[in-house]
Length: 459
Ligand SMILES: Nc1ncnc2c1ncn2[C@@H]1O[C@H](COP(=O)(O)OP(=O)(O)O)[C@@H](O)[C@H]1O
Ligand SMILES: [Mg+2]
Image (cartoon, rainbow, N blue to C red; front, side, top):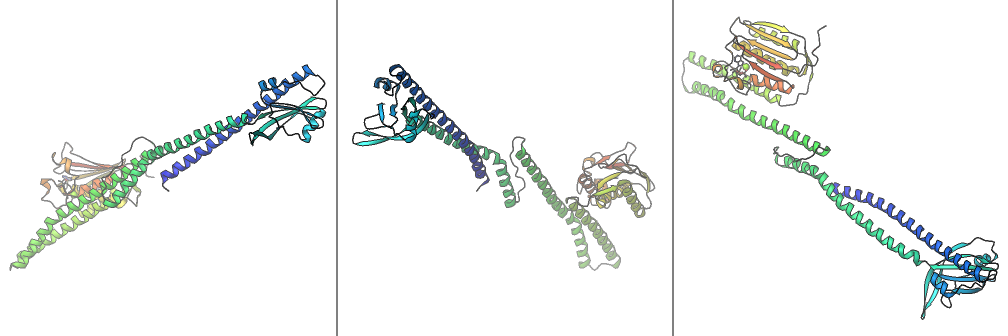
């Protein structure tokens, strides 16, 4: 059973129960009311008959209730003697009497209370007899005499039937309306769910992540749809950037591979002097080193697309200090000036180390020998400043792009991926990168990370 159908069945069931309760209560109340009225009218008629008796013969059972008065009042009347004989009767067809039981007879003594009963009488209609349910009120009239007044139960059953039919029609209409409204509301409510199902089926079938769910409103389902869209967007972005990386990487790898291949072919074809052979082999070795760096960088960038799993609290100042120590050993000619303030950030240490190393690497590459490289850490920001040639204005917007290298940098070794990795690391840690050109030359590059606790001080 579909969820929509289940919702409708449940709501229809709830409405049916509610309507049934209301309808049966109304039915019982109306029925009681109708019986009350019938009983009251029987008592009224008895009072009128008693009044007639008092006027005509105060002591005798021979009540002088005329047929015309009985006809005007309506209903059936009979008086009963102590022996149980019907003395007088009005309104009843010939041959038809109200049944006289022991209880009715005992009423003639005047010692018991008047009572109501329901009986069936038989009224002759031509050759056949018609049964009729009547309500009878039996009461004491005079010594040795009781009076019975009766009216057909149709006074109750007919209006009651009309009420029952009306209640049934209204109830069925209400249930029908509940089903229709339930169908519409459930359809409206489930539309986002249906859209989401279709979208995820579409993604599963086609691997196309560009599909989005249409949504309106601010309710829970709209929120669910919105977060589903956000998830699709994130997946789409990550897949696209991965595809782009593969495309860029294969393009960038092709050139050095071609160069290596050409060199090797030259070696194979020509009978070269030993010196030239050595020269070419040195070239090939250097190109292979560069290829190795490029491959490492590409792998690093690809890794950056993965979620940060091993996140921990990292002392940024200590991490930078260690990175500078390593850089010092690699390029002893450079002079590092440190200004490291204690600072705690959340991150993956190996990724942060890589980003800082890339900044230091660039600074060393472009810094003139013996010029100072200033490295500072404060409040989640790592800045590295050198006094080299700086970055041209037209290159500034692109230096963080993958494989971008300023024309002036192309003579130096490098892959153009260093700063792209820095940006990726910063962004995946909820931070950003900035580049500035100080007025007195050189380049100032910074990683700005959210600092965990700025008031943190080393013990
Ligand atoms: N400290 C710096 N001084 C001058 N130019 C820089 C500096 N750092 C980065 N750049 C420029 O940004 C480009 C991209 O840097 P990067 O991504 O590290 O690539 P690579 O170092 O492999 O050339 C460099 O090619 C260079 O043009
Ligand atoms: Mg670099």
